Amino acid sequence: MSTTRGLEGIVATTSSVSSIIESVLTYQGFDIDDLADNASFEEVIYLLWNGRLPKSDELRQLAEDLAKYAEIPSGIIEQMKSYPIDKVHPMAALRTAISGLALFDENADVMEEEANHVKALKLQAQIPTIVTAFSRIRDGKDPVAPRKDLGFAANFLYMLNGEEPDEIAVNAFNKALVLHADHELNASTFTARVCVATLSDVYSGITSAIGALKGPLHGGANEAVMKMLMEIGDVDNVEPYIRKALDNKEKIMGFGHRVYKNGDPRAKHLKEMSKRLTEITGETKWYEMSIKINDMVTGEKGLLPNVDFYSASVYHSLGIKHDLFTPIFAISRTSGWLAHILEQYSNNRLIRPRAEYVGPQKQKYVPIEQR
Ligand code: ACO
Image (cartoon, rainbow, N blue to C red; front, side):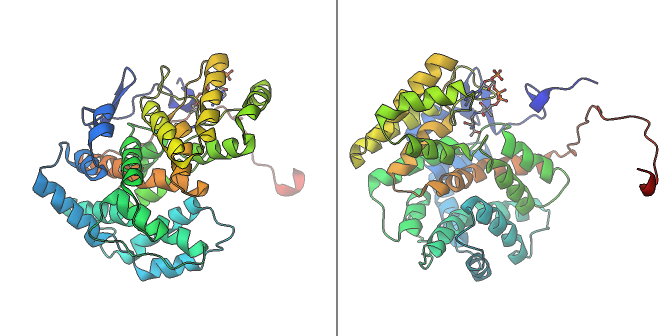
């Protein structure tokens, strides 16, 4: 038996949701560059779930369905109020609340295709409501109910801040959602597929995926990048800070990737957005620091920025609290997770690899008093 650490290079399934071929990321065959410049997040949801872009009436129907399901059960709001608010990370709160949603859905365990499709709509519609409600509850504010007349990106910013966002913020946030929506068999997507391949329910699949995304080697890196930028504080401090980190063989968050060795195609969009948004806020230092870190880490280690590096300064410039960065990633990636979950159900086989045993052999039981 041979093993591959971290399953590097192992092809574990076939999928038609998204692909990474020669460093080009596509959703259902559409280049991410094309979608980032042109598509709404709702169009991307439809594309990932149906394999094609929606016609106008199909897009209208999806928007109506998302609006219809966006409110969350009052029991979830009450539950969130009972969390130890000042100690809980929003990703932990999100993981628990998403799991809690299953308790309020009488069809949670109904495995028919139509029932699973409705659950997908509900989860996609409700995850922004949960993230924003938790954010407001911990600030001592009432949650803001979703509005039926706003698109997905605008509704999130509206529910978060309680006021209608401007067009620049909506467009930037929409683009960030499009860029994070799916990414082939990344760690959290694989987790979701492993979970539902036991024929467990959709809520369990998304809950598991959120747990995997939370880690700093995966989606948690965007918050860690912002923490680093805050610690550095000023462009002049970049050189000594990064030098020390590299000398100490520390990982620089937001750099490196298991699959891309020639650069993450999403990073250039976020870099451009970071430049533009920091100019608008007048806080260009976040972009300038990012560029300087990028130059040093790429110059000295040959590592290129991944999706998380410039998204940190983008979200910061949109006025979003830093510990909400990863929950936002989860809101977007839910669309991809759901596409993969539905695909897994449609052609399921239990996912159960093997481990090469390297522990002791032929041990004999010794009574406790003789050990
Ligand atoms: N900073 C410094 N060195 C790094 C970094 C980094 N960010 N990333 C990789 N390296 C080094 C490793 O230390 C290792 O060096 P060595 O061979 O001398 O031991 C070498 O590059 C190979 O790295 P691995 O960790 O083996 O690469 P792997 O494919 O296992 O990990 C990962 C990929 C987890 C993304 C890694 O690059 C990393 O930890 N990056 C920082 C965290 C991060 O940004 N994660 C987000 C990834 S994108 C996403 O999930 C949305």
